[in-house]
Length: 519
Image (cartoon, rainbow, N blue to C red; front, side):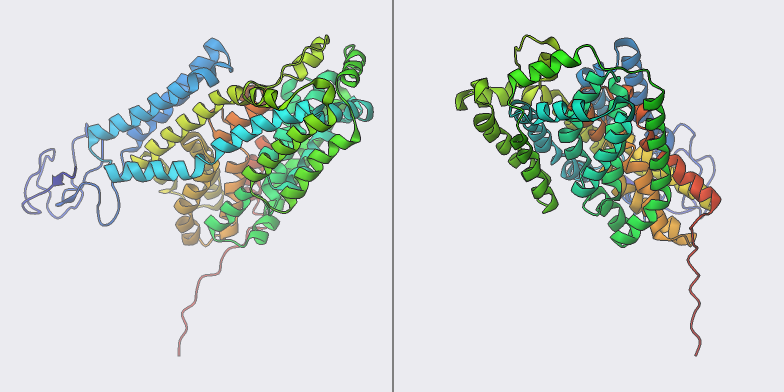
């Protein structure tokens, strides 16, 4: 419903104004008012073509509630409680933003529907991908792909160099595929199993996997986030990738050195369980090189730039065929396959380490993640539809003038958007649209904007427990987001490197002002 706010003339006294308004379009109003309202007759939802936004303090309330509640839950019940209680917290925060908006009467039905549609377009495609990741994990385990990789890794990799090799291999695969999700869900899972047997803690293994996967995702021309960032900022894709290297390569170099140092200084020795585990792997699975045909065929589809959902579906089919053709000793028939896909794999081999390693959650185990993603979508749509996200972003940009401050604000805004929208694509689009005029006004190149967005958004999304990336990778690797976040060295360093390079002024040209032509 559209309510009118009107005055009879510009010299009349309004309710809430202490003095006549004179010709001031925005009169002084009571300090208790929650939302900015103009004093001219117009539809409440628009002012000179712009939708009204809630006050910054009001816009912060849902986000502050979300952060405080999640932190309290984590402290009280541990990080694993996020998957159980996260949806309820996100939905409550969304309801809070809608309630505050209703009190102020700012959001319209149309704006809320628009916000929901924008969130749904970006986030809903992740749901079938999550389901397919669950089925790939099950079929690749039962077909012998993951067991074979673990066996080869234990025979060939040195524990001292395991973390740096893991990071490097994941980065190469991610550059080739353009997908951090696919890299982590396939080769990442195998590296996790190898590292556990070697004696590494799960957070360090996950940190090396995620650092490598997100490096590749960030600089690959096949990556959707790279394309979105460059197109939103209005920059050529390959110019954007070349400019990324000035912050990405130093951050990755430091990350590799950290992983190398951790490996060399560790006092790891082969786990006493490794020999029995290798024996159990050999007796349970047919560890044939033919199992590598399954990831090889999947890699061919990825290089051909087939859509992710179709790649993962094909990977599931390849894995299912591998169960029947390569692992007949498991006695898994066609009638057993669907229950296995739904419930996950569970083998009784007599070796506890292998039983635990081969257990997958299936589609049923992925459902809590799906619920969390959908709840995050609703929260993001509420923040967008009520205008609270716009209000928070404008507060960041209103007084920025210096180069370092602008880049720092872009990085901070990107991180805030990742928290508020729970989706990296929405964060890239909103941040790019909000900051393009500011960069243009200050004669900063658009590629600096696209780089700052990627440095802050693409790599930090996986560090936020309720972001779709953080939710997914935590579920796939079986390690809580807050546990692996401190070990994701590349993801932590990249935003800091972006600010440092801006402060030093390295390779940051200024756009020359346009000189009018005279006849």
